[in-house]
Image (cartoon, rainbow, N blue to C red; front, side):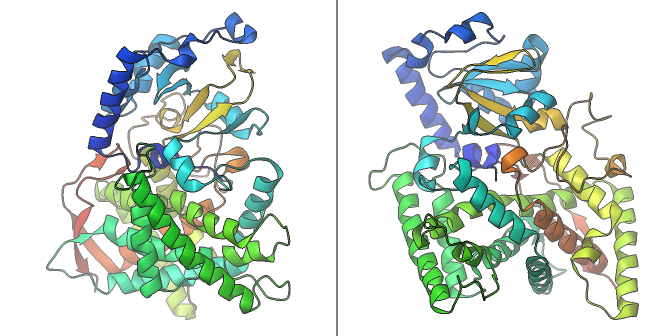
Length: 491
């Protein structure tokens, strides 16, 4: 299970935080020399040094990276250096010497490597909030065990049916409140729906006071994912840690109630991820570890589905031809199921090829996952590139997804490019919207399902006019105005 770079590094970085970080970094520039840069490279690394520049002392090229992120062409930082130094180059970002990979094959090898070569790397504040036992940090047999349990459950017929029914119910409830005389903010609506689906799948929580309490505390928690690593009262990190304590208390209560009601017994069918982990008899999977990880599993899932749906509607609003074909395909499904009087199931929603092509193209164009960061545990050589021990590597998915060597007219939204291409595996060498390797997101099929359900009911129930809105790529991928639309109910 991977953690998206856009979320863990940038999702909650406010402009004030960036400015403060830059000011602190500038001060250190005059007070000290970056210790890492004074250390001599390892004997192997000294033989083959990658091209690139390390920028200013301590600051490196962080400010340039951030400033490019605020433009309409956020990958310009990568494109400029790729032209000068090649597809793999060195730089210095956020206090660490870093290798940037825009090479699809190099990135694939890194993603598929085990913990002997590369491990996940995160900012200090994020590691503090996740805890040492987080599935997003652990490696080896324990990670494989938890990842395997969750992955198998996500593929189970039970969860597929549950998520399908729950998502459809919540979507229809939300749409029933939409009014023709005021705008509907798609980004807000989808976030509210997706969080409830996620909480139900993870801990079996239904809508109500506890769900609302969890949602409020979770927003306080993620506000500190990237913040100054200072835990004094009044700091953002301290507030986020306090919010996590409240969430852990609630989830521990839910887990202990599950145990009292028989969850964790092999004779009882697991209804959510928490019960799957309770059913495992490993002494390492304590109630405290499970509750911690329920929160951590919310982090990468909190934005991905809502943004996928929101961006799909943005692209469809700008591409009438694609919208028409998508609508006709979904109306056909609706007529068939109405004639048979059968409710739509998982397979129905995922059976529509053009709908899946729209989702795939949205993932490629939107790049909700900008990339992931790994840290080299030893000197590693890949395709002639030497990655020194202790250096970070950013596998930059956006650069690959928008590379005209892989995709014709890559900046153009074109769902037809995926016709007759099997994307059921979730990723290929040049298409990695959900990461890859041992940490491939096990919920990639669920993300497609949720997007398919929303789009099906949206395009068959409504016509709409979208207000002008723009995609912001920094600190996170999001719509500047939350994607306001004016709906008309279809007759």
